[in-house]
View 1 (tube, rainbow, N blue to C red):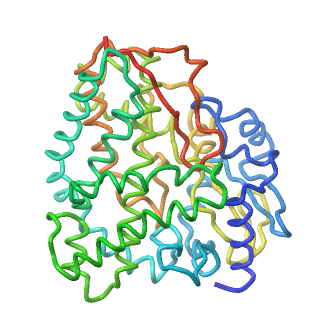
View 2 (view 1 turned 120 degrees about the vertical axis):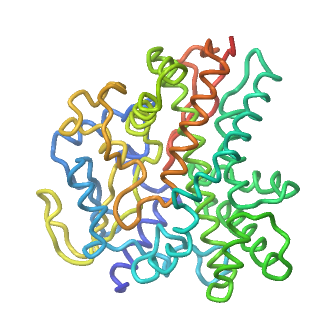
Length: 414
């Protein structure tokens, strides 16, 4: 990456991590419940692409239009993702380095993605269905044991994806509680610069797990063990640990948010709740796709850095400018969805950008869909009379986060 681009990425990352971004331009990372804040919708009146800010000399653009966002996310020739050389305190411990698929460009990205892709084929995912069913059943039993009122975020929203991702990775049971402690608050920008320390704890745990497996194979037949066996000669512990960490990130926090926020939305829409209980697979798929669009917990895609001068939408973007795609805004684009502010599974369509698009589309997207379908259908069938056990106005949502969620969701099992 050219020095000017590295400097741009550094300034943006440091400003964000330290929470120095002016309050007036934080709105892409804020919500009103599950809805975009009015400021985001107001920005759309000025076009699909608007200049968000000028931070330390760097122009930052915000994309809220679906078609423009899709084009930006797909164009890896015009935009760079790689900021590894300038953030993450590269000179310190390996676990403090930024890595993974989201912040790499070709050819490194293809080299790393080739490691993971075989583990997420349709055949491999089908083999995980029994594990997902078991994890979901255990979470539902736990809810029943602690009823009649429980916090769905704690006992279902987080419990299900954590169990699924630990099974996927092949995490030994004795290590799971320690691993869980490392997983909290990685996306909450209220932690400021401590985000890097929080991320380093999880990453170091997985690097150590890879190293131990390399020294003496002992893990169950999971992703970590397979990566070491299949690719240990070509990748070091930090690279394989970083890939495992990326799988954890993609499969834990975002799925937890989707399950919690998705349930919150469904409890306000009885017909969709009934479709989960009694509908056919097509009905369930439409509910899940509409939830992905309407909730879209990942608020912004990885920032793109313009490699050259170009036109984005109707704006002239210069080399070194940062382009941020608001996934929240994109999924509520009225140019694509006539009644975008309304949750309506009957109008659900393919093409959600909730998992990204192009080279950096989430490798675990289909696993996430499997998890959502299985968990929400089982929840609706086990507790058909599930209801909110508090005033909706009393719920607390994340205030400033890359992954949006609700802090707790008290429910009555019925």
